[in-house]
Image (cartoon, rainbow, N blue to C red; front, side):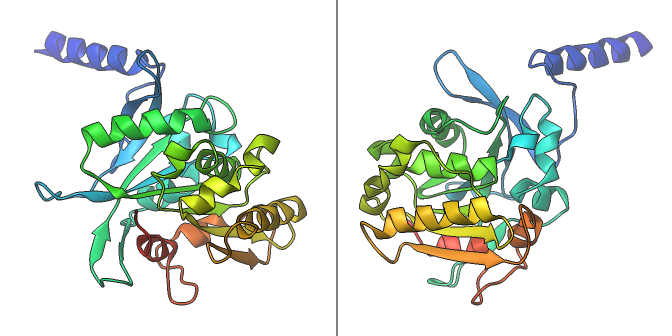
Length: 261
């Protein structure tokens, strides 16, 4: 009996380390591998509703991490962002202000080895997640903080197909994207992607970036953006990702649910 137990533990350890990671309990999220090509995967954490209803589809929130989280340790994803809220016991659900119904989210948080998630990997990742989980494809949302905000802005300006899949975004304290992406905000407006930006008053570089993103959108179509400028620097995302945070009566999750494809 003892030998069988030891063999089971050894098998679990080997399975975990097949991806270069120890076996860790990530509850209430689960560790998965998401496909970014027929031959490549990336590690990720996923959160699904506690009691999913058969046949029901759920909004998908893709959460991109900051640069300090990048690497091979999935557990670091819990340090900040939506995943930190989940790890601290908060449910990611909200009332849609339009139809007054409660929506539970599926949340996927991919891990990049450096910086944050690459925009060219977002489309195949979405394909993979949609095949495996009950995603409402009219309600795909992106969010990210710091380098993860760069991932959001890069993804929605990557190409027309990807832009047309995204309903709305929340971008916090984002670095500036590469020049070709900055020139493609017509994709954002044509796809009617709404974005709520956050930037610290004392985070001058990031604040300028936020204004650049807003102006790049307004150039083609005003009314798709909002900007929250808060006291502080490159910080404070935990406050805004908390489902209890409200601005003009809405949390970021309630605000997202207003928009769909």
